[in-house]
Amino acid sequence: MKKNNLSAMTRQAGASALTMMVMVLFFGGLLTLAIKLGPIYLDDITIQEALEGLDGTPGLSTMGPAQVRTLINKRLSVNNVRGFDAKNITVEKDGDRVLILVDYEVRNDLFSNVDTIVHFKHEYEMKGK
Image (cartoon, rainbow, N blue to C red; front, side, top):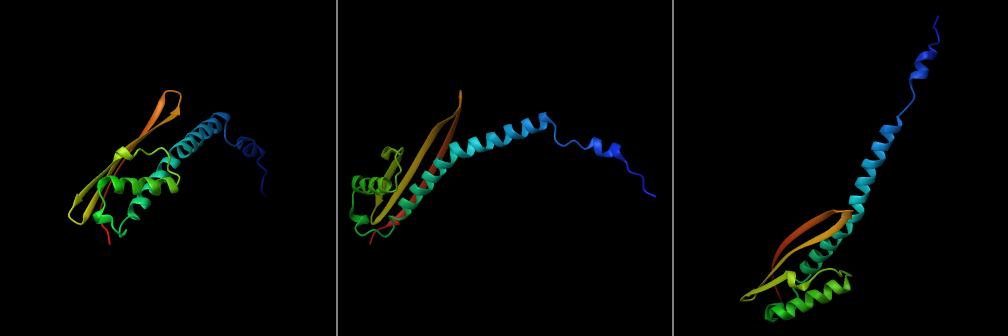
């Protein structure tokens, strides 16, 4: 015959308050990072798509660097990328090829005196029609 062991049931109490607090702090920190860094990476993806969309643009190979930069700024404005500075774009021409270099960093306050710095560097070589 089985004997009911009630002492085993009383030992199963679940997570302690300290464990719950550590879990909340850990997942709260991950959520804070996602909220602060997520938009930065989404803006970078939008910048990449806008620059890749320039490939095959009619008259791109005949445009000067200032005109290409203006075209890029218009595309970024349409895509609602606001904090990006056009000075971070370098446009070089080599015959009918256009080389676009993008090198920038984004600084963001995480909390109190802790900041994040995210650095992006992209290089595109394209031809116009």
